[in-house]
Length: 132
Image 1 (cartoon, rainbow, N blue to C red):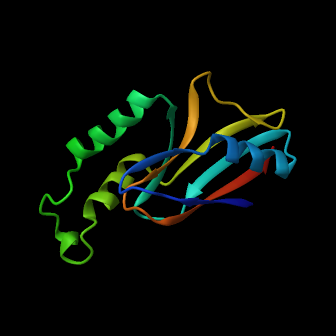
Image 2: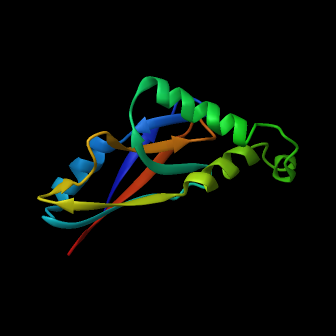
């Protein structure tokens, strides 16, 4: 198992980690299997989608519409970051991606993203490669 360390720079940010996940897969030496990408943070998520500038902005705008900051959430009485927890729940903490020929088997436009919802922070994303 390997890990990816990230320094996020904004409250909400989407970071393409595909190349770093691919590197972890190569280092694991697994020809055929699965790559499990997982964050242990409750205010962050992992997802797969396209890396296009306008779409990245759309992701953030969607999250703001669905789960706006400061909308009277009960958890905000403790940490003022309920929106980040709720946004993370929508995407989930991890993704499982097939591996073949020691490469992630993503579609043409698919990329693996780390989603930050409570930054800026130092974050870690785990990559576990399972041989089949």
